[in-house]
Image (cartoon, rainbow, N blue to C red; front, side):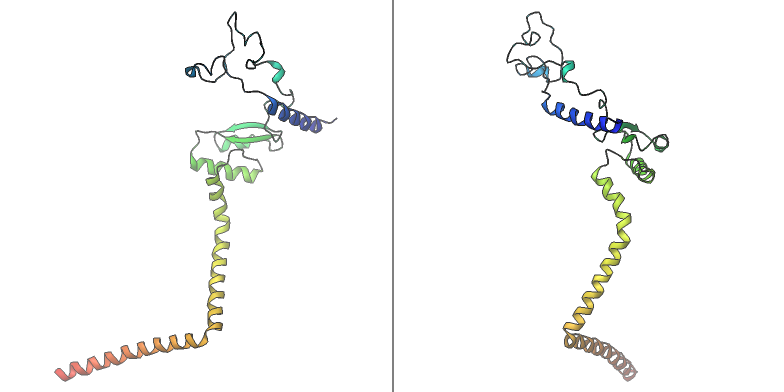
Length: 196
């Protein structure tokens, strides 16, 4: 078996094991809510959970672990690396590594990192939906505007073809209004001259 085959097999086994793995709950967490469900090993001398009595919660043991090959890897089979700035991206090999942007990185720098990772061919694991939308907008904006203009033009042409009489009437009305304005202006001049 080659290394990629072994790795893919290990990832499948890890997935099966993680599906069967129980939730490890602290002893008597159901009895005392203040304890919380975070795992703490039970150390009592007479602890039934430590003694693995029937009906008690499972204890964290090495038997629940996944295969060594797949341990700590991303589901894609690549190693995850935290990135804080653009310089960190230069050190990354896209064939073996997947990038996760740190949580304390700001919005503007996140966008810069994502854009650079796209150009380098590095996959970013934690791209937010809002960032996807921002990245897609500049590419689609000119095309969308062209499409809208074409739709408007086609609508206007269809209206002209469907209702030529209505359009002619509208044009005549517009022409009459213009003529009426000119006539009223001339008349005003005449009236002004008559008063003098």
